[in-house]
Length: 157
Image 1 (spheres, rainbow, N blue to C red):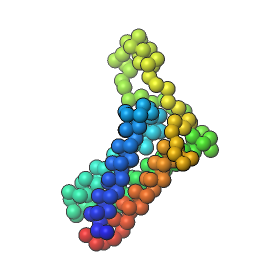
Image 2 (image 1 turned 30 degrees about the vertical axis):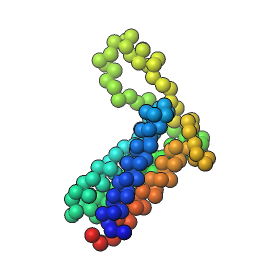
Image 3 (image 1 turned 45 degrees about the vertical axis):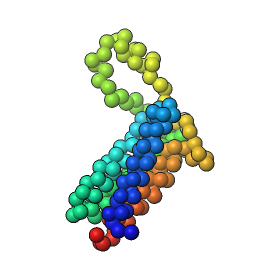
């Protein structure tokens, strides 16, 4: 398989994983925890790398290697998250928000807190075949990383 095809397959894999996560959230009502959000970023970056690599032939090999490394980071986050879910180790204890709460009144802030879904990183909201969503992300990200790195390894156009 040519490098361009491997890059397209790897990029499509990240699109599928990210799309699946968004579908579970917006169609299935499974709200993500903080670590779930972290797992999405590498796939978004890998999709961008794939698009640039498909448009700029001279950048394909370095972007393929970079894409593989990025998705490996995502696999690591997924593995860490799966371990937290299984109780193998403790997860993060910090709470994060992407909204500027300084612009909210005390009543608005309280309402936002009370209406927000509580999503814990150490609970498994969905599983298939004994693997949680985080574990599946780790496994499939490893597969995608292999495809990326195989595209970067070969010197064939």
